[in-house]
Image (cartoon, rainbow, N blue to C red; front, side):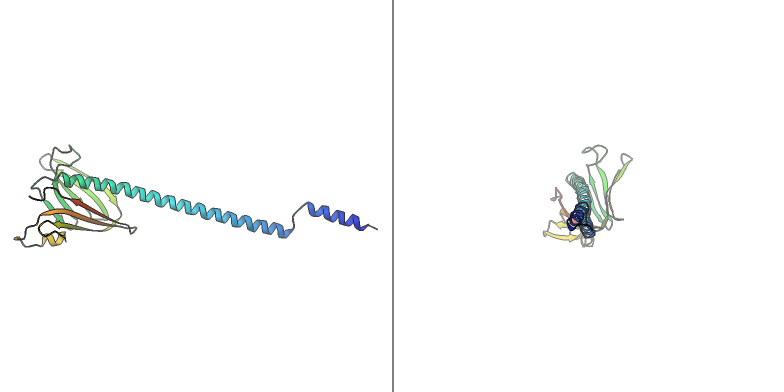
Length: 195
């Protein structure tokens, strides 16, 4: 016959050697929860990183666009055209890729086809250059600040004015809407508005 102290001793030593099934299941559940939380944090971190990269890229392209538009308008040739069209606008400026400040060129800002492109050319020099500044533009509007009465009017209203109502354009306001829903408003003063 086996003594009860021997049975108690052996069952106690068996218990010290391993885990029960319930303990193992609880451990697996807790480690699964921990891994899912880590995966969620990493996934959110990756998503945030991509959003920041996208915004930084957009900011960089917007900075370039604003800088070139500003230079075009600030170097506008006095008495040169500023023509509004349904797909963009044209002007004569001395800001060009060939030789900045020395050669007047015709510049066309093309805002069609979900892109913003800038074309420049000079018949006198047999020169043309074109480059794309931005993609993903879903819509745009262009407004003009009329210097005579100090109001913003659309480019279409400016074109449809009677010939006896001349306008002095003091500034332009370009509203861009992107495919991801972001909006940007660019306002640029046009110098020599007294012409």
